[in-house]
Image: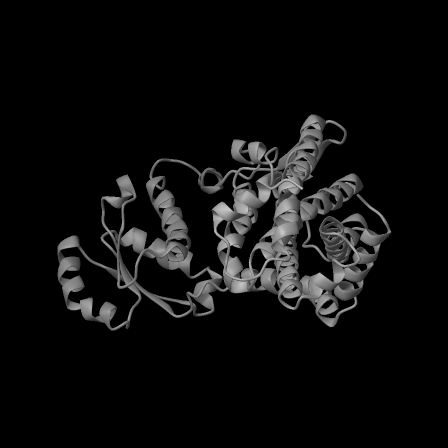
Length: 422
């Protein structure tokens, strides 16, 4: 139901939300915040906190020890002093004595750890590492790769195999991935679409939570200040609710357009901002679908958050009612994160066709795999059907709750509101 009164409420919502410093600053600041977040994550990954690592390398085999000295000396993280390595050759019996004598060095952090390579390691590649801390994955990956290289060289040294063959054996398989689509054929992938999937999910997650909380607090504030009573003298509760939801949804859509614009410009115009070889395949129709899906989804969640706001009198009271709504946003977001390891996992495919989850999962899924047309249509029908299913109940609760004050209602009482016939 859309009439002049609804349009008046819609304009009021747009004016109060868009023309505010908080909205303008928040809208413009998020792209910079995202850059800072991803930049900080990259910095944390590149600076893995292993500066000053001191390791004593002990081996029973002299040839292995000489190989370790040669290979480690080539590594940049040894040259720049991040890793300080000392080398000793001794038998396993002597090492047991050495370990007892230098146990205090580990406890006092004079050395990070002591690594022992027994002679049997040339058959089973089992080494021993003694340290005060728990399992250090970064150290094991860095040091382990070098040790494995030395093991391979020594294992094949007397077997008449050339160094070129050994170098080939050490090379890991490198996957050049191509995405197969019906229209575009074969598209080379570099991880860019996985990153885009994460960005889409993050934007939906942030916006739905932010706009939903905004709506809930606005309803509670109008209810507490009795502003809604003045407004309801000119419009009915259904028109007020419709106008507020549409006004806030348009505000959220405008904000999302602003957030997407730099991403779309960089991808479509191939600006030299992305890392070299970082390919992102994005079609214009996908952007339109993303915005349309977001708008429908935002209306759904705004209706639910407005209903929660109408039931309770304070934001503190509303926390018990808003938690299930937040889980409807958080769980689909976590499902999209799981697609990073396997974009074609069944859970994501099913979730992209379910109420509430489809709003977040389908836009993320469409960037990493070729989604059939019927699934897009079904997902959109599910989203529309969700609105049609929940709004009759949400409207009844809103109409009664918006004018109700006093103690917090119990669940049985809220159910009675739904059953109440006008």
